[in-house]
Image (cartoon, rainbow, N blue to C red; front, side):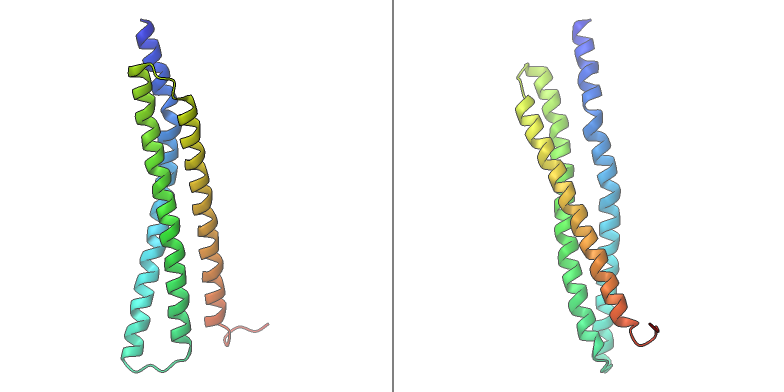
Amino acid sequence: MNNMQNLIQIMQSAISPIVLISGVGLLLLSFTNRLGRIIDRARFLVKEMENGNQNKIIPIQIKILCKRGRILRTAITSIVITILIASLLILLLLLGFLTDWNMKAIFLTLFSIAIVSLIISVILFLSDVTISLKALKLQVKGFIQK
C-alpha cells in the first residue's frame, strides 16, 4: 500500500512538467506558424524581384524577414529545449521512484533551466513581434497620415 501511495505522489509530481509541455507546445505551434508565414512572404518577395519588380523596399523587407526568421529559429530552439527538459524531468521522477535516489537538486536545476529557456523564447517572440510591427510601419509609410 505504501508503494502505491508513493507511485500516486510521483504521478502527481509529474503533472507540472506535463502541463508545462502542453502549454509550451501551443507556443511552439504559434512560433512555427509565424516562421512559415515569414518563409512564404520571403519567397514571394524574391519571386517579385526575379520577375523584374524594382521596388526599393523589397530588399529591405527580405532583410527584415531574414532577421525575424533567425530570431524565431532561436525562440523555437529554446522552446524545444524546454520541452526536452520537461520530458526528462518526468523520466527522472520515475527513475527516482524506482531507484530511491535523491534527485531533488538535479530536478530543481533542470526545472530552473526549463523555465529560463521558456523566458528566453518569450522574450525572442516579443522581439519578433516588435520587428514585424516596424516592418509593417515601413511598408505602409506612404499610405497612412500622421
